[in-house]
Image (cartoon, rainbow, N blue to C red):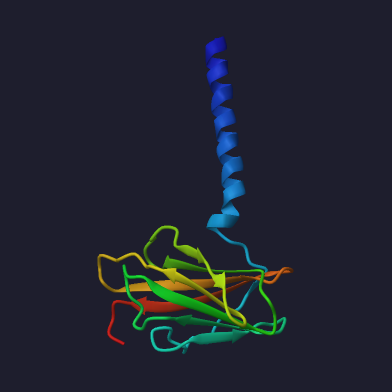
Length: 156
């Protein structure tokens, strides 16, 4: 009987450990934003840079260095900010209808409010795929998320 109780206690401790680890890692996998700003739905990242004005002031602009946006080939992503100085800038790429794994890059600061990184999107077996590129900007006092949608693998 003591062995069964010991196994039950160990099982409960493992469940508690999984819950604690999941809670600690959840901000990395599912970032929380203080503010979510929706971009102009007419803007097409496959054709042009897209920008938004933040409610607290300032602006953020996302530009893809290669158009059309390639799959399985490195390309540059640039986020430009004006009116504030971010402490951290990341871009998270996720498939809309298909989980493509963790695809988040931290952008390095560059010239005058510019942040850049080389990224590579994974290939989709269907050839055409809907993506969301979420720009995550930390301003020191808040975290802003800006979700941009685009489609890869279609004629532009």
